[in-house]
Length: 512
Image 1 (cartoon, rainbow, N blue to C red):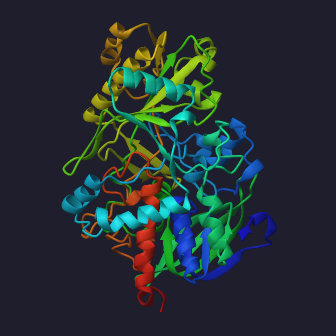
Image 2: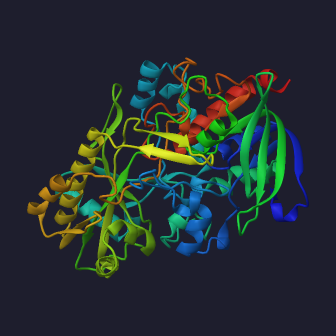
Image 3: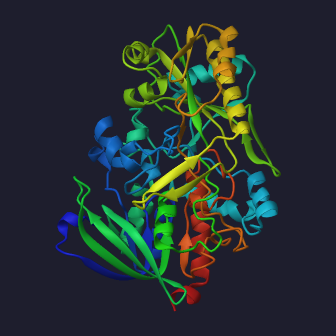
C-alpha cells in the first residue's frame, strides 16, 4: 500500500524484515523480490506517487515534483546540471525509456581490474533478460522515429556512420513527447507500474514524502532507519518514522546514498564513500532546418549514432555517442544558450529544430561531500580526455546535422554560436570546454560507493553488502567501479536482481 504522511497522526514506529530506502530502479526490484519471497517490506520514498493524469505535462509543476532539488541540483561550481528522479519509480518515471545492457567488455574489466569475479556476462545474462521481460523491452521501429531523430539518422547515413534505434520499455506509445515529465498515459513501463505494484500486492508498504535521515547499526549489523515525514506541498517536516529491520537496502541513488551514509557515519572505513564520482556528462548540438520537424512530438530519443562509441576490456566504455534527442520548451531553451532576446530568437526556431545529445562516458572525476548543513555538495572537474572527446562529439554532431540539410547549427555555449557551415567548427577548439561556458547535463550518475572484494579499496563487496556493517546493502548505481553503460536503468536493475538472489540464497544468514 501507498502511505501518505498527511493521512498519519503522530510519529510512526515500524518493524519489518527489510527496509528499502528509495523506490526507483533498484529499490523497486528489491521490494518486489523480497516481498515475493514472503518477507515484510517497508519502502521509504522522499518523493510522491505519480501515475496517469497526476502527471500533468506542465514543466514548472512536474520538474519541481519529480526531480531532486526541484531539478536545480548542480555541481558546486554550477557547471553541470544533475538530473535525478525523486518519486515512486525514481528515474524510471522521468527517463526517456532507453534500455541498454552492460557491455560484456565492461564486465570483464570489472573482473580483471576490480576483482568482481562473479558478474561475468554469463552470470548476468538471465538477470538482464528478467528485467527486459518485466519492462516489456522492444526495439523501436524505424517508422517510429520522430523529426529530430530522422535528421540524425539521415545525416549519419549520408556520412557513412553506423547507428541504430534504441531498445525501449514503452508499450503502445502515443507519441506525446513528454517523457521527461513522466508518461501521463502510463505507456512507459516505469517501475511504478510493475515492480512496485507487484511488491505491494505481496504486502509491501511504501511511505511517500518520507526522507531517510540516518541509518543505525547495532552489534555490527544494520538495525534501524530514522526518517522524516514531509508535507507534500511545503516539504516541511511534519513527523518522524523509525523502521527497525533485519536487512537494510540503500537505493537512494548516487549522491543521496552518499549523503545518507556520511550523515550516518557508516560504511566508510575505506574513506571512499562519495569518492570516484562519475557524471557521464552530456551537451547538446542542434540544427535549424527549413522544414517543420515538430521534434517535441513522438519518441523524442530513439536513434543513436554509435560510430564513435568504443568499448574494450582494458578501458571499458569510452569514446562518445550521438543520440537524437529533444525536450519541452523549458529544457530546450536552457540548453540553447544565450539570455533574454538571444534565447527568444533562437526559440522561434523550436518547431524547426533537430537536436542530439553528445554523451561522453568518463573515468571517475569528482566527489560528493557534505556541507555544514549536512547537504550534499558535488565537486567535479572534467578531465582533459573527457573534454577532448566532448569537443570531437560536438564537431561530429554538427557535421551530421549539416549533412542532413540543416541551414544552421547551434552549439550550447553561454554566448550563442550559430554556425553556417563546417568551416566554422574551429570555434569549438577556440572556446574549448570551460566551467559554466556551455550547457552540460548529467543523467547517469555513478561510482561513489564502489564495490569490490577488498575493504580497503571499496565500500561494498561483490554482492553490494557493506564491508563494515553486515546486513546493510547499497544496491544503486553508486556501486559501479567504472561507467557501467550509456544508460544505466537496465544495468542497475539487473545488478539488483543478482543481489536479491544472493540475499535469498543466504536467507538463514540474514533473517534468522
